[in-house]
Image (cartoon, rainbow, N blue to C red; front, side, top):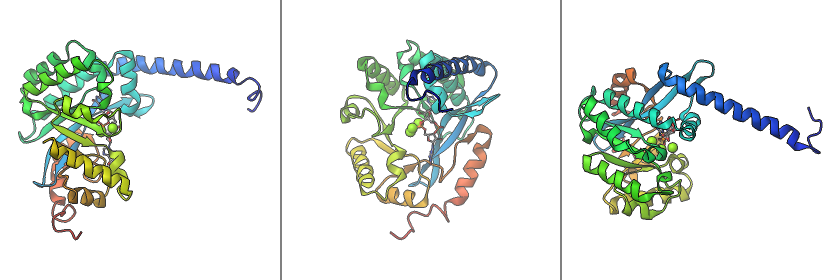
Length: 287
Ligand code: C2E
Ligand code: MG
Ligand code: MG
Ligand code: MG
């Protein structure tokens, strides 16, 4: 197993690379088939409005139940779909599915759908969204879209036009993973965002004063810009409490619920509502 490693590294490197490419190609082909074969699914994770003590909506998150490899995470197959062009089809599917799902919920619940930067290259994105709304009958005000900072690497005029149209249609536009990307604060003033989503990286370790400082300033920024703010990745009561004390009211994370299949939404709603008084009693909590 150790032969030749020092002298001729490429001998091992080249076949390994070829193998990786091969596996990727196979996965791409599998992904193409996956949509037709019902292996792709949406899970839903609630947004908690801790101020009003209610669930305010759900985020739709893709899952791939691969026949041979179990569940594959979107962090693996979404980039693959972006590179192979499949993201357009996958994205339209997710939009339509999520809207059809949400229209069955109580009308005070929103649905949030992640859009890839690559989807903004598609000439039909605005029409796709319009059609998903029209065909499902979902009010535009109940649809949120989440985009990341990768959207702003190039073609910002085109992106601005699309986001402006979404805003005009009545959608809520959310800046996902805020603070982790190519973040320039200028984007927040140049583009029509309604909401900032504080990335879980800052929430994860709020015992670090640096992270508290970042969280505090993002909350302040959202206020100054009259945007909503939500924190993601809350896993503990302590994190919830700190965020609440910092003035953040909308939250999402495993502490409240993991993403779960559509059929479990009624269960999630009732489980969360029964936890308000004991576990989520942020107001009554000592500081
Ligand atoms: P995201 O939009 O930032 O979603 C948040 C991710 O964090 C989700 O991972 C979610 O399951 C996970 N998460 C939620 N709460 C917690 C928590 O308390 N702790 C931890 N450790 N993680 C938490 P997931 O479902 O694996 O999705 C990963 C990413 O894949 C998403 O990040 C999003 O960028 C992308 N993605 C998912 N669905 C779609 C989609 O329909 N379209 C596109 N373009 N991207 C998607
Ligand atoms: Mg998201
Ligand atoms: Mg995020
Ligand atoms: Mg993320």
